[in-house]
Amino acid sequence: MPPQPTAVVFDLGKVLLDFDYGIVINRVSKRSRSTPQELHHLMLHSPLLPAYERGELSSIEFFEKIRNETDYLGEYPEFESTFADIFTEIPPMIALQAELRARGIPTFIFSNTNDIAVRHIRANFPFFANFDGYVLSYEHRSMKPDAPLYEAVERMTGRKGGELIYLDDRPENIATGAARGWQAVLHHDPAVSRARIAAAGLLSTN
Image 1 (cartoon, rainbow, N blue to C red):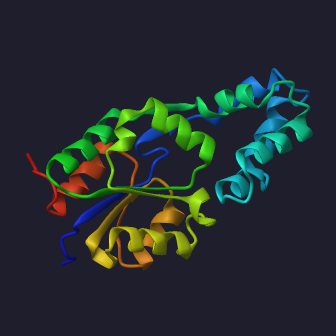
Image 2 (image 1 turned 45 degrees about the vertical axis):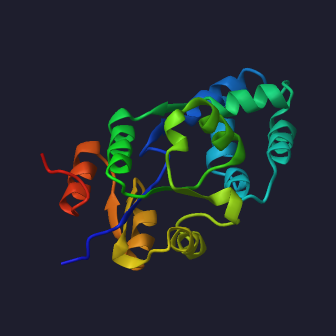
Image 3 (image 1 turned 45 degrees about the horizontal axis):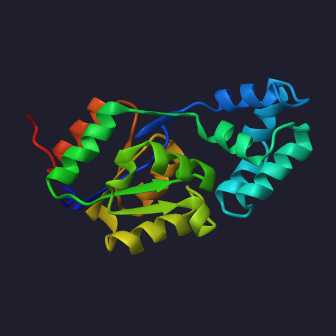
């Protein structure tokens, strides 16, 4: 039987917040020479966004590369607003984290993300302030599922192996956590994830 975990690690996108890159793709296409299909490839299937989320590009450098590739007509403030405003809360998961916090269980965010997104989330989603720590890819020059970012979580939390229960929607990210002995939960349904945390002894089963 695995040990009872003493902290919960949450992925951010598709776990606590939904997001839709189609929003930014459609908006940028209307202000550039690129079609939505070309922008979809540039933003989601080229090395550009991963380089930004690893902290290899500043936000301005990322914007300039987008502008150079697409002839985007807007200036940086317009692009920042367009690129950031793609998130919506997942209420049952926000409530789950709040319940854990009320019970004194430390909670952490562990995310492949970028500076523009995090500044927007901090300004617009109050729940984001209510965690004990944050491991964000762009601040560590590493991305999930690579081991160094998981090592950063262990250093921040002061916990290893089965002391951590970890929720993420991507199987490859979960696999690395499980290989480190974390109690890894592939998130697909809030009720199922809550039940798994309750089964680990951190929540009431009622």
